[in-house]
Length: 230
Image 1 (tube, one colour):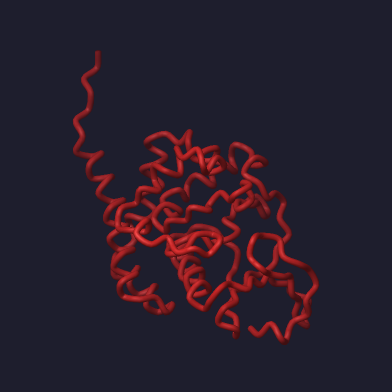
Image 2: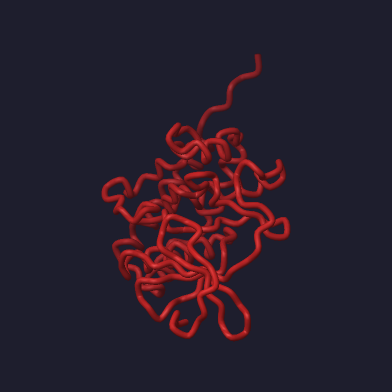
């Protein structure tokens, strides 16, 4: 899709330069202007990985301009972690493993505004903070490694209060279920999706290693001796 063929009908909503655009049929899109084609490719790769796991997101659309990325516009019923009811919070918690695996530090949003509800379904609204870049575009560098520390950090980090609000009260069984969403995906399928979407072999191997790190936690839990009843 080419922005030049669209009509701008609204301004940016998040931190990145962006706008709301409309095509001739009346379909609207939220188009972000990112720092480089590498940033746009990174977010599209994250969207493909979320899709692979089944984690709900907005519908991403490829743009003719390589530094831009778009999602189909939808009217949200809710857009804030604080507004989720208990059932919606449980929906969102199901995808903790996916957020952690993809290092999506911005899964909850700076103001709790990266989780929204449409027709009773909870969506992650922006994936710009996943994989190699922070939400504002800075590279994560060595902080994006093969160990998935985010599984703990997203439930405990005082600097990410909305993620803590969303995920901190998850019980061990809920955390295991969230890990299994990622652990069951074949490594070869992960490699295929990343390479087909324009990602590097290096990234593919890193994501397979991160999946293995999560799966290893399940194996340790299974081997742990149970406590004798008092």
